[in-house]
Length: 474
Ligand code: FAD
Image 1 (cartoon, rainbow, N blue to C red):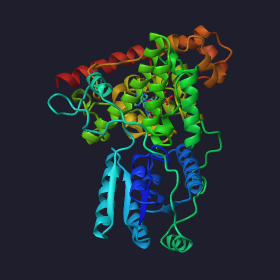
Image 2 (spheres, rainbow, N blue to C red; image 1 turned 60 degrees about the vertical axis):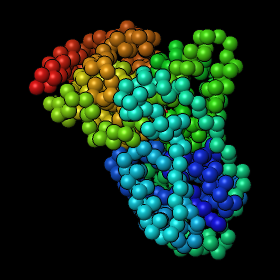
Image 3 (tube, rainbow, N blue to C red; image 1 turned 180 degrees about the horizontal axis):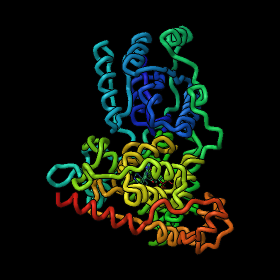
Image 4 (cartoon, rainbow, N blue to C red; image 1 turned 90 degrees about the vertical axis):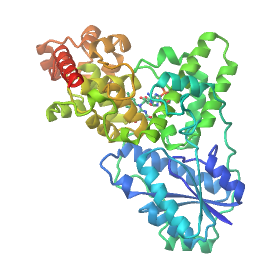
């Protein structure tokens, strides 16, 4: 009996919980991916991300071919396309892995209803997390809204081993392949065919092999110094696995197993602490996904009271200058230009620019949240929303007000100005002191063709605090 396995953000055949279950049920397992205009025609899509996704689908199709089966590609609304294909091929069942995002959950309900009505079985699994939402609850059975106790609980739980890889499967006969074509299956298009041109090199390479190679390299070279090096944007001290984790080109259980292996091999307490710190980042990822699942209203707006209906200033020129990396604050501009040019930004810089937009420009964080979606290779609704709400002091964060000073951030985390010099080339000739403090004279700014600061940090900080106080006492 044929089982269709519907891939979404799990673009791999190894360590894939739902796919392994499908193979256990049947020797005939065929993959399917649906190019959904509900996602691809939105105004929050980045060419770099679609390019990564299409490259990963290409690799996935090759992996299916290697084990004797196929990856089918559909284009259109999954609610129509998936049941139609399953019916044409007389599939016994459609399997998939569950998602936490509101759009995906609605979509899956609709598809599942249509399949069941057609008499086709549906099975859905948790795959993208080490612990499913609602598995980690407080003593009173409620979802956590604070990270640290979540982390303590989460890390104390046993973690599953990687799921069995798909080693072999029977695919469609030629006649069935013709039928699939008639029901709308198409050859895999490129990102360009879909209207997303990305001519630069990708900052993170697509496909499962690249993700595994990167994980191995990170575990060999950087994980045991992660805590020290992760804060410096000019250093390659983080894993750069975010796109792989977003699209599931690597399984989270395999990632966890690699960290456990690194722990078992490490020789000092210090190295062990560094590895634990990285494990904690994986836990942040799960924390935000659990939060999105349990509190889907997070996707709409501020979670915390003082920031609901906040009187943002939302100056469109300031917002544009922020987007373009033309604020006159070198560290902010370096970070925005890094994202605009390569489609990825270092975490320290994501925090700096998010604080700058929300606290210095007093702009609604949702504008920045969306701009990130339009630019990042690794954009993920839950992580991005969590990061923005944290920076905007509107999220699940017990510390109420967080305002980053761009100059002190640059002095601490880019002390030699290397990152700024890389991304703001017109300032390369200046002294490091000027770069990191941002104390650059008007004449020098003119000479370098670099803008004057669009706002004054101190003034805006006070202005924000006043507005925040007023909101609190309202
Ligand atoms: P590493 O430091 O190697 O971390 C390993 C993995 O842990 C990451 O790949 C990611 O999956 C996860 N992770 C790390 N930090 C966080 C975090 N704070 N929250 C959730 N997961 C985390 N991450 C995204 O994956 N997609 C986003 O759209 C995104 N938007 C962000 C927006 C803002 C404003 C902020 C402050 C952070 C955002 N992050 C986002 C989190 C973080 O910046 C990135 O995950 C990280 O920079 C990716 O690089 P890395 O893979 O080298 O991370």
